Amino acid sequence: MQLNEITFDGATPIDGYGPGFFRVGGQVLEGPVLVTVRGARIWGGYEDTAPLLALCEEVDVLFIGTGVETAHAPAALRQVLEEAGVGVEAMNSPAACRTYNVLVSEGRRVAAALLTV
Image (cartoon, rainbow, N blue to C red):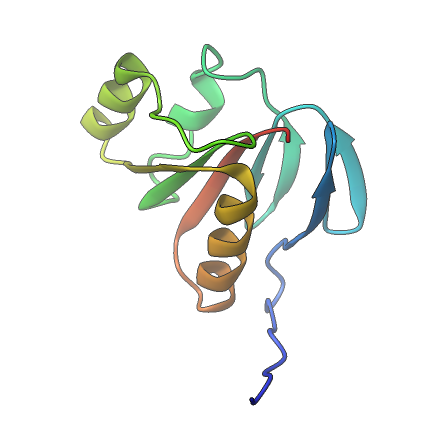
């Protein structure tokens, strides 16, 4: 097996997560977070759509981490984001963290809105 080191070229990686927190770019944030290549901030959850819509010119896909279990993103949230031109992919938060990191390392235009595990 060959291991390759991932480089992020200035983008903010998700370093880890645990019960109730995420570690992003070396900083621990408690509660749900929104992560972009520029950094991370606390996110208010599904009803907090303004910061997600603000990303419509910067990202092609938003990964929604639904916590421990995979669940559907609320239909209204998905609809408003897709109408703004942002693709939405819902998955459990650990998978969303991994997928975000891989695609950011490739220079892709992605962000992650994550509920805690």
